[in-house]
Length: 249
Ligand SMILES: NC(=O)c1ccc[n+]([C@@H]2O[C@H](COP(=O)([O-])OP(=O)(O)OC[C@H]3O[C@@H](n4cnc5c(N)ncnc54)[C@H](O)[C@@H]3O)[C@@H](O)[C@H]2O)c1
Image 1: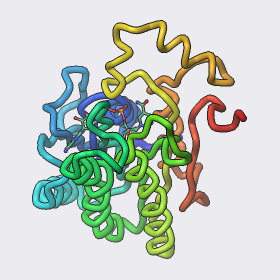
Image 2: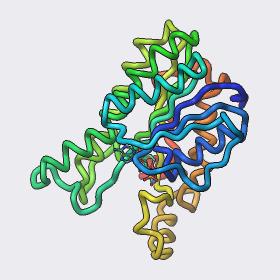
Image 3: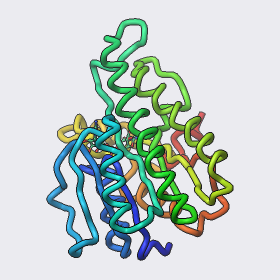
Image 4: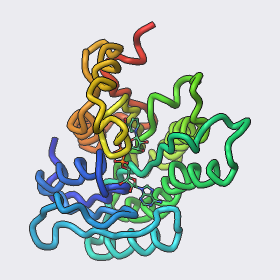
């Protein structure tokens, strides 16, 4: 998958999947800007000029606009946008019948509005480049209900799928593709509850037909494929990367 020389923006790259995707793009010769509310990861290493980290709140339109403008002005184009920003707030995000609506609004802002903002500001730069590719991270949680509900998370992740399809149709004639990855469980900072609980991971792995939970590398390879020209006829769709979890009865 050839990504050398491409100009990318990876949102939510302070850790987890976003960081791994940014590192993989850099290792293959892409120019990569990362953005996160956290500072740049110490694990992020890149040749001079290949990487820029922007620290700030991706629900803030002025931060997103200025960040994408500064990176695209430097390169004159944008080829790839990757949206991985997200929060899963155990305990606070629960049934819509009982949750604090301020929590609802904040989850929607982080998990959905931040994607809208990055898309809004990325599209003009991709149009100038003659096309581009976007990958947005949803979740298998978007596909079904839950008897232990996290309704803001699930609803925001379902909305990402619909948003991406609409973006795909609107900008297809300008050669801008938009696709979604639906990960199954992956041990990242979002799932820090498993850090001291290997037994919980083992129990979960038994439910996964392929017998393990996901690795960030599984998400990296799916994302690089969807960004790359190998996926040039793929837009407006979803790729489930869950080891078969949602396929089982
Ligand atoms: N880990 C899993 O099991 C899993 C499963 C399904 C879907 N996902 C989804 O995949 C994506 C990546 O998840 P991850 O596991 O790498 O999570 P993560 O927590 O490691 O990464 C998410 C990043 O978003 C950043 N962020 C949160 N709020 C922000 C804000 N307001 N402004 C800027 N940055 C902000 C965080 O600082 C963090 O670095 C998320 O959208 C998540 O919902 C994860």
